[in-house]
Amino acid sequence: METLVKTVFESMSSINKPQRLFMMSLLSVLSVFQGRATYRNLSRYCPMSERCFSRWYARDLDFSGFNAQLLSQVLPVEGNKIAAIDASFMSKSGQHTQGLGWFYNGSAGETQRGLEISMISIVDVQSNTAYSLDARQTLDQKGRSRTAYYTEQLVSQAPILKHQGIRYVAADAYYSKEPFVSPVLAAGLHVVGKLRVDADLRWMNEAPYSGKGRPKKFAGKVNLDDAYQQFESLGEIEAGITLYTQVVYSVMLKRKIRVVMLRTVQGRCVRQALLYSTDTELTAVTLLTYYKARFQIEFLFRDAKQYTGLAHCQSRKNQAINNHVNASLTALNLLKIEDRHCKQTENASVISIASWKRKKFNQHLMARLFDELELDLNCQKVMTVYRQFSDYGAIAA
Image 1 (cartoon, one colour):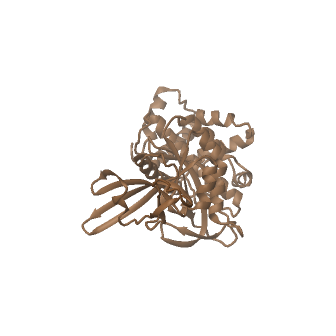
Image 2: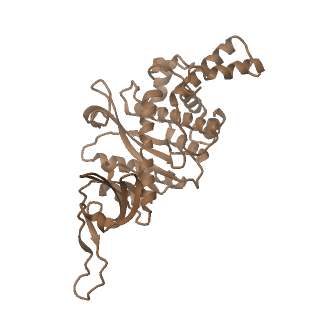
Image 3: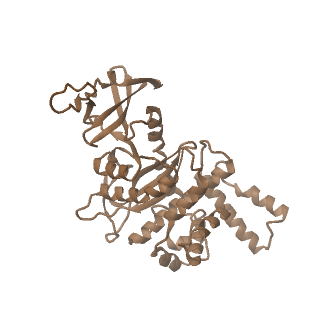
């Protein structure tokens, strides 16, 4: 893995040697530290001082460019991949942190005061795993909506996504707005998302033109309570869940979309969920697969908060927060890629980040001990002990 990281950094001409050495050390220490990822605690696991972390975090570190180069070498261009975008809440104490505001906290189910990060990830559909590409702190600006901020971030990353062979971006219902969808389409990407159960949809008029007046564009409003009777039925995908699809016009998005309805009937209880894609040629099953793959971005937030210190940045400055967030997510990327290489498979598999953190810490500690004892890892006996105790205490040992 160290060889891959060095290769990626050496291919990035925008990063000089001191910056490269710091970023490599930072990614390494974020994989082994115990406790909280504060400057002082991180300095306990590497030769860099607390002040060194503070100085480097104040500079512009290109973690997004590193992720793009890294994933282009790990994930095949012809593979089945999509992009996903979502935001996550981070609690933050104090009163003077840049970007401090009121954001929705999904785990608490309410709006709370803190910070928010918006992340774009690349999801490998075959292995059902997400990798972070770019993360930014949400900053409220007067006269500018948060949707516009998310849109600008995604549009700026569109060339990288298209270079990776990605055509679709999956997002939850919050992003199902015309100010978000139209710029994304203009950037050359299609949106896969979710609609409200009472979405305003119109049937497309397919009747021949009568020859009088303006041609009729719509044939009435879609009544979602009984629309499934006129949708194309694709049968049951799971017990009690039937799939329906149709191309209709969305008044909110101001365009034709492919709608997929998942209808569940349990006695007298009827529940419906509406998914959509701006690509009307996309099949309903593929649309459903892409939207389900979107949920992998949630595991990035969870694992980074639990294991690589995503929410532990002690700085109050936006630049330092962005650097720390991206470093945390990039360290998580490296752990997932190493797991992928060790298993030598591109199919879906269970990844235990807790086990990888334990393994990395064990290897870090043994390397320090063997160095002090002047033991050579090339010695077969020493290497046997090294491999045996690398998995000591790991869940999947």
